[in-house]
Every structure is written in C-alpha cells, then in structure tokens.
Length: 152
Image 1 (cartoon, helix red, strand yellow):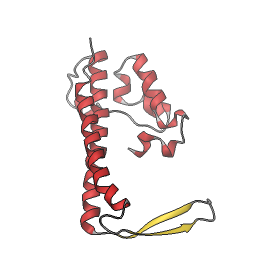
Image 2: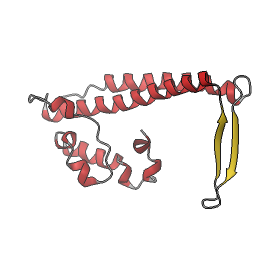
Image 3: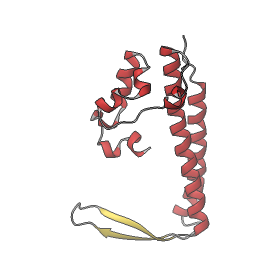
Image 4: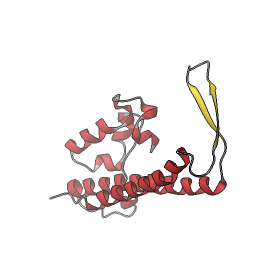
C-alpha cells in the first residue's frame, strides 16, 4: 500500500503561507516602517543572556500576530496528525472500534516508554516506530526544551 501524503503536505504548505503572512507583518515593524514596539533589555546574571521584553505594542498588531501564529502551529500539528493517520492505515488498516479514530495522533512524548504506550505507536510498522522514536524530543539530537516537537 502506498501512503498518501497529500493531506500532510497540504497542511505544511498552508503553514508556509501563514509563515509568509507572519513575515509580512513583522518585517515592516522590524524595519521601523510600521507599529512602534518598545522593548527593554536586561542582562540575566544567572545565565549571562540578555532578556528582551516587550514593553508595549499596539493591540491590533498583537492580535494579528497571535492569530497568524496560532494558525501556523495548528497546521503543523494537523499535518503531523494526518501523517500518523496514514501510517496507521498503511500498517493496521482503518480502525473499526468506536473511539479508535480519535486516538490516532502524532505522539510527542518525553520518553520511549510513554511513546511505546501510545495507540498510534502500537498501530504502525516497526520501521515507522523507529523513525518516530528518533524524532522525539528525548532523542538527544538537540536540547529537549528546544526541540521542534516540544515547542509545537
């Protein structure tokens, strides 16, 4: 069986559209052409990092950016869930028991034991399980707190 990735791809393409819309909102602000946003910066002595805080920004700008970011994140997460759906269909077929469909989602877990207990993980092929395991925040490839799935 061939996995249909058209749904996940469409969601990711839509996320790119939102990313472009976000950029079109932010670039004029960063260039000083629109909306004056006041920032404050302070050195954190514990970390050595500068911490920037937004002191003020127009409500309309804040709302617009929040909506765009929300749509972007939603599309990314939805694309992952559609990918999980396709992986389950490929290995186990369409669920037949009530409630199973709602349990299919792309798992994002903090350790391999929790991942192994997810419904989706139990319904996909061993090779896909290995890929999902390597993609998790606990994989050690990057700091778990900065991992894209953790942020998502």
